[in-house]
Length: 215
Image 1 (tube, rainbow, N blue to C red):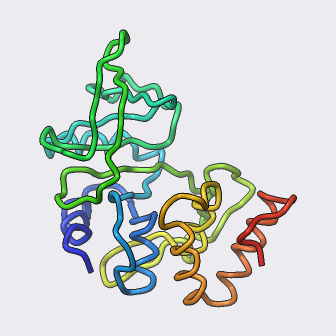
Image 2: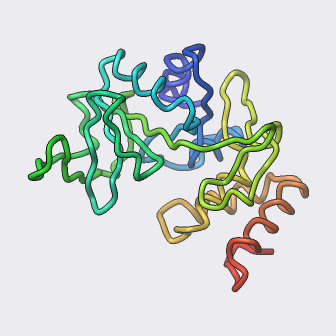
Image 3: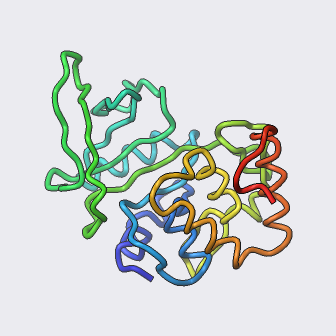
């Protein structure tokens, strides 16, 4: 597996919070091969442990920003001062070449532009926060859609990753994005019937009018 993923796992494990690789890297971990270039490293974490994650990444020297929408991000200097409009934060080092920031007229709020050229150094990690309920992982956009944690969080060796069916459900909102269709094709070729059935039911719930990925 890609060395960046191994490095990321080494710094995240045993730090007092749960996590799992998600996005395109999770699909590759499921398949067991690197199938395409990935723009960055996405990590699933939980809302209840958000402050722990932020403090830890800051302790490593990362700057932490929370997304606000409309191309803006808030620079978090104190976990007691968060806006929490969106569920994702990104952590970057000062030498990170993957983004550009411009000041706004708001304190600690910046315009942001990402460069989707592919990550080559461990200088950027994005966390996406989720909720869980008892033994289930809740889909962030609709908590009525859930998956047992034992099925949602899988492992490739000691690398935890989000299951392909839940990854694809998140990707289903933007299937035109580069790499998303190939992620679907590659995952579907390797998923079992239970995983395919769950995904189809979830897509039916979220898109009753129809969706390209519904069986």
